[in-house]
Image (cartoon, rainbow, N blue to C red):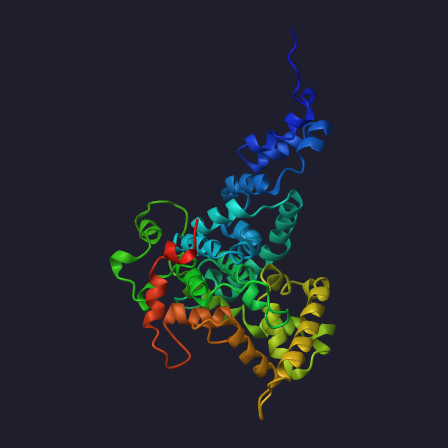
Length: 383
């Protein structure tokens, strides 16, 4: 008796094969076998693809989980702002560090096979060249003093994750006010403290030694050969001053038609929007990136011009710019007591979480207590 070949099975069974695999390479091998399996298995459910990619993360999607998290952070943010309970789950995951945050992303997000191909291309064409440049400029290869960006690739992806995960806040300068309120400043600050862990940050945020996150203390005791940067915010600080600065983006954007079409008084806001555009912000720093993303830059420029003039002229006071007037209005709309700037930046946020620097006379002890305190279920609504 001859055995039945796999491609002879009914299509409804073949469609279900990917969910029983263990890695993305298993999936690639499966649908490369024959035309029947290619038609049935080459485009599985995005949630299955993300799970398989995550299972292969430490081999094919390094640095893990930052690369895959950067690719899914926007979906995670869009899901989180929809309900208070989702915000609670996001905040709780952040307390567990970047690994727990990625576990939540696996539960709520997905990536198609086309997304995986684009991500691989992005890593080769954008991330790898910038990683080399940052390494030479401010990383270990720079031989620049004792303090360097220890892990340039992770720093680059953390920059992108910030732009993707908090895009609702960062896009307010050029998009209409969203249907759902942006994630709170406390959640943003917590992301720095727990997902970019840094011994300096724990000190300035006044964490008692026995209350530092368990994942951080475990890493200190681990004998694993895999390198873990224990001063990630300090590394990012070096990257920001040596490479990821506004001047880097302005230099690339200067010849852009959308930049030239924007009035000089709005150039700073335009650059701010471009440099906080998540994964695309890094793409602007590689050759050809500005030309490729010019349609997106046009949207930013047009949105800034329109929103600043429409919103700003309503309440413009003597000596006040249109951009400042719009910022004041946004602060009132958002109603976030710890949002000191309508247009938050990674640098300003990190100045607080890394050094405890706050731009004002506010008593920040309540904020630091909130950062150290896990979210409470009862404040998040019913399960």
